[in-house]
Length: 263
Image 1 (cartoon, rainbow, N blue to C red):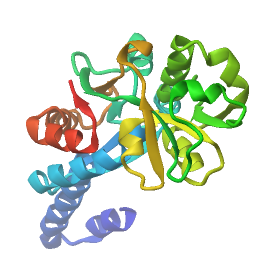
Image 2 (tube, one colour):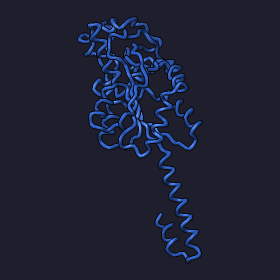
Image 3 (cartoon, helix red, strand yellow):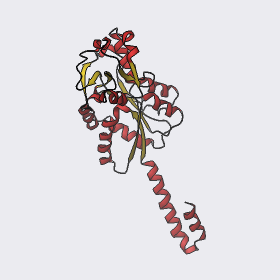
Image 4 (cartoon, rainbow, N blue to C red):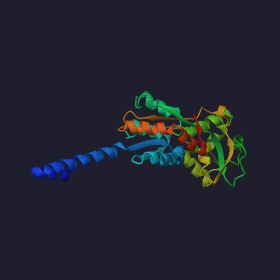
């Protein structure tokens, strides 16, 4: 950039017009590149489905570049609170979005409920040691993977399910905590644990595990994925556009294909 400015300063009057035009084009290009860049922080359980949604959106908006940051909802919340450059946040629970809203970090009126999901019990595909949630009490089961409940919503839902079934106290000594639901899935796939509790959408992505049981809807808090544009977004118009696409019928069909519930 300094080189380009020095070229302008050293140019003769007849060449300055060309230099000014070049600088304007260069600066406009930089602005457009920044304007068309979207950073989306999203719950780890959304990785596959959002990659497909991005493909569809960029067919309509080829100049837009979307960068995803996937992780545990609690960790993503903390990153935003600490000033991370994020345009859109999609959490796997209301709790993390509520915290950001309480600190006035969401763009007014941009928060919407996007998706729902289900909690399931999974085991390695060749395992026959578990046939229901209550089997987790058995002495045969020594390790149960679930997300760290303070930062991973799926882990919190898992504990609620076990409490509802009156087996939390007898199973908690077997817990192996993971940083997000994808790590829970990996632990089960590699047979490092006997069972795991994840979203049905994660289980559907793996051929190395099988679903043993689905948690009753009344056994845990409602599973809702809210989405919102951040107050600090440098690209509010494009962020709103992508959020609207996330809420439309075309995106809804993609969600259903992966097993999510459209709200």
